[in-house]
Image (cartoon, rainbow, N blue to C red; front, side):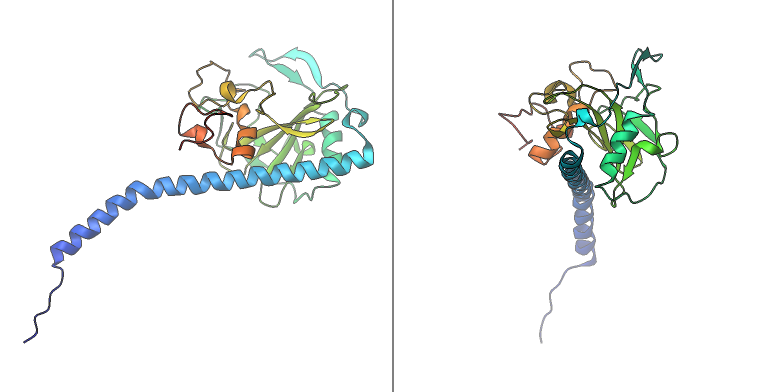
Length: 252
């Protein structure tokens, strides 16, 4: 007579329980990594679109200092001491030039649940808005994947690698967070450049530090992450300390 062997019900339940615990521990990490990869892809795509559009615009209109850009700094400050810019003219001029070479998928206001710095502090300035596409719709372009390009303040007389003005890339997420779902670029006569490159004022070490060891204001803390994401293709600054352009470019 053959004797059959197998698992008892208790053994099966214990095994399933172990699998459940392991899954509960690993799935959130895997989901988080997938989300980061998705963000990186979106930022790289936005950068590519902007860079190609710039080359075509420069070929047709010449260098940005010849685009009719006027200084949009009003010389005034808000209640927090931040400069107030008039976006009504120059940002729209630049946006319309780029729009000739970027397919705009429409106009659909996007309201963020919150707007915060890299370390989670509120972006506490009246010049920052949690809603895009209402009062500033003339300064926006929408990509097919939902990414929003916001053309901000502009500065006349820019030369070389100096900034002619800011271009903000907002990923279509519920929260706008610097260095996570909002990434900063600037327009220059040499092209569209990412914030946080090695020669930039907003250095990665100080402006992409989730611990904010340098004590940066919430309106700028996280702006130095963009170049890191493009070059190193990771967002490991969210997970470990001591990252460095020359010595340590990932947590591993």
